[in-house]
Image (cartoon, rainbow, N blue to C red):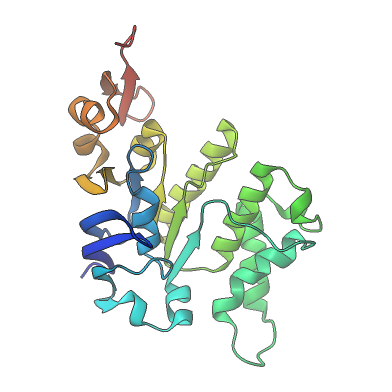
Amino acid sequence: MTRLMVDGAALGYADKLVCADVSVEIPDGAFTVIVGPNACGKSTLLKSLTRLLPPTRGSVLLDGKSLHDLPTKHVAREVGLLPQGPVAPDGIRVVDLVTRGRYPHQRLFAPWSPEDEAAVAEAMDATGIRQLSGRMVDELSGGQRQRVWMAVALAQQTPILLLDEPTTYLDVSHQIELLELCRTLNRTQGHTLVAVLHDLNQAARYADHVIAMKDGEVVATGAPGEVITEALVADVFGLDARVIADPESGSPLVVPRWPHG
């Protein structure tokens, strides 16, 4: 049974409906990437996979049970989230923020454990921020802060990790480093990852499974080679492009036609 899925869900904010009827399954143990144009519902769908956005109709299921009926700490031990544009408390050090990722594993009156210490150290090493541990978060660059928040999510040590535009604020080399880290988490540690990405070529290179959205609907799902086609790029993104094999990875590579239009 698929651990995480959305079944006939209507999703939105206040009186604004974004997705009218969405059903999608997240493959266990895969790196799934959600793609689509701006305001198509990508982040809305991702938020529905957490407790942040309950559906107004339909359901979101974790292990066959309604996600929003499960205890908060139970969900936090199973599903981690790197949100878009997180804000740290004023005057907090990097190491103190990363330790907050261990909250779901804490028990009342239980001391900080060697396991907690190791999880924080591993998360900071994986994201390359160990040298920033004593710095104040609000003194860091946008790219450094993004890596700190990634460390918070990793310290939570959840089997399922959701990433909402994780490459925002990162230069291209750090984007690749982060996506390589995601692939390592998926391939060597068995994490199920779901990310929203804007770059189709990065999605094609790193994803095992792609969910393509348009106007609040899921229009295609499957392996990158099945989903990222010239017809889909034209329909979903309005872009006249060739899709060729990436000479390095063999994955689909979207090349806009020149001159465009």
